[in-house]
Image 1 (tube, rainbow, N blue to C red):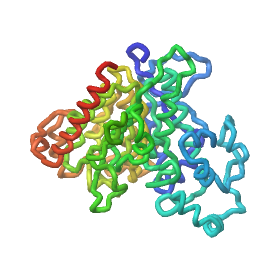
Image 2: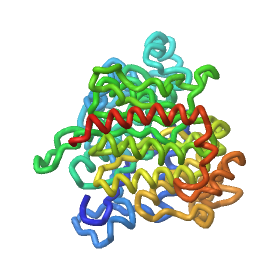
Image 3: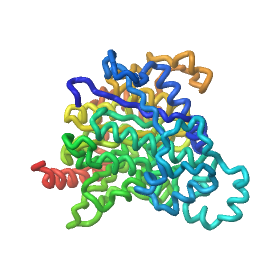
Length: 451
């Protein structure tokens, strides 16, 4: 990192319309970017190369382009990619796509309706998971290419040492598989980004980012797609904190603490770690007690952090299961970022789940302020008037999202990641998880002691 200033770059795709059409999160992309911008957290990149503003004050906007088909196929199966892009009529979909796609004629072929496509391709839709929770939708191809493009371009900024922290709130689609969509996720931008980070920098004087740690810490669901993508390598350590209840059918059923990668003597043993939690207040506890020691033991060159917030109170999917407040989530992210900055590690922040649009916008605006070292006071920070009409931020019209009543007492006693957590020390289920992770900390410490 350059000097004492942390250089932050913020991915803002040129056309948000396809991103706003994602069936599970309609309108969310614009709501997030509008709120972040309204808070004055962004600055446009100057074309004259001059910059008289301290970079820590605001994030540099990276106006990202669509990815190419070839870039998608760096991870995804070509037949799956073909199915994602089928029915669109722009021949440039395979090109480098340098044009501003706000005026692109990449669009749905009007001669191919969804009903006709389904009748002709039922088996293909089922094979590639393009039904049920991941249906085809208008401008799906642009959506997929925009998400991948944002993650890839931002990763290159980090790899080439043009930034220290990158933010891609439209990314974090952690359930997508190599050959299928799953769990509202059509493209595994996290896997694409990790591979891009690990490439040799164009500037050979720069050190390669050899080891990347993927941290799925705030999303309530297990990061199964990313874990599976890097299951057999020690070059990437995946850590997922999530709700785990296979008996109750909680998606995606995977992620037991006993699942930790291939069995020894594989070099990838202990490199796919899972931290299932249910206990109120446990997020702060496992961050301090387990996550920070794991990062220290692995000594990564870069972190990719998935910041889905469907465990926030009020979320229609995960709010009643976790019901964390935004303060607790923000404190955990801040602790990891401060540790990464102190050790000069590159960090890529991705979005993810979150189905209460006003609260998602609140959360990611808050996380952006933390990345910039301008952490907001949640209760005192009001929603700017210019975005009030876009999304309903009432009745408080502040950034704060309070946790469920059962967790609020824990939060009120907690200052950052400390506080009275004696009840968690006595929780047998949580302590079983912590002790299992302690074993992996030891394995990683021994493996990377000389690094």
